[in-house]
Length: 225
Length: 204
Image 1 (cartoon, chains in turn orange, red):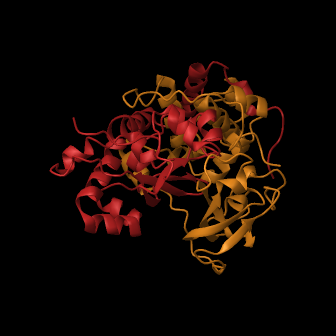
Image 2 (spheres, one colour):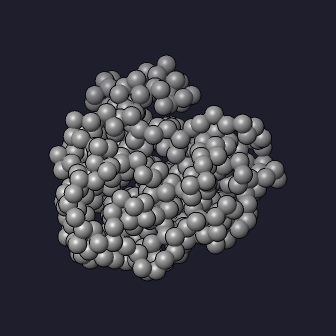
Image 3 (spheres, rainbow over the protein chains, first blue to last red):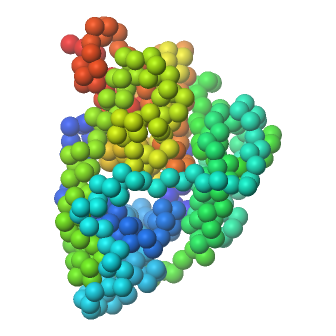
């Protein structure tokens, strides 16, 4: 019901093989370039973070699995640039023109980088949706895990936590709802909670009876349990 | 509506990744949509200026100053912002404290969410399929691969970063560090200890 990116709990990926803390943070020069081109393009203001996450998630499962991390970013970026009318297919083919673009005035300049990165983009918003749950209250997540506003759309409820019973541990205030914001349907802010689930509620063979997984979940993903 | 056309525009770019990013950068630069000097600046920021040393300073201060720690645990975002650590991917910070009873560990199963202003860009393993898939289901086996074995009486809480809240683990202060100042303490705080896949170094 969700997409290929939703891999929490999956079997078969093998060992993690963590690199040393002293290794360079960009293993290849092009990784750094891919990150920078993606961030700089985002500052053109043609999409939001939820749209850009969804662009990576809806790569074909075959591409998602074979692309390395920054290849996913590049593919998502190229798709977004065309879908939002910033570039044309001819541009990507190398057959476009080099005339100054109408959005060129919005291009991020070197002397604005520090300010732009440190400004951030908070996701909390005032909302008229009342906070319905309190700390400690038992809740159950929706099942199936799916976007209810756009079929096949972006959602942040992973499959492994669908239909599970947990309890509220933190109330984060009211935040932009990705299920809406990723699809041009508005920010639709609503209450966001941290919900703790016993490992035994999520997995057939939990490692330890007291272990828990905590997820940040929006109010519309939850019902009282 | 989600776009599910099977001819993704990205397929028109060169397949080899280094050429692919070069092609995209060239197209965007020619149209005035990006400034290569701005790209250099972004890279320099995350390569040299913003990294785990920021988070380590926060942890060392929390170990040294009970008032700071109390404020940090209550509402981390303004407290770390006062130290200059705020910005992209760190707009909503929550600090979770390790104790003898509970060990915390952070993952993003759906993508790669990570507290950039405090830890910088996530390492490759944090973004790997193996970590994303396994951290929530078998955190103890994952920890063992990082060389960490927890006592049986310690429970594990794995935080899956599914929203814009970013989590930083406050590790336990190592024994034998009573006389150390903040700078010496910060040198013991590893990146992985603030993700929860490692423990701080023990003074030599």
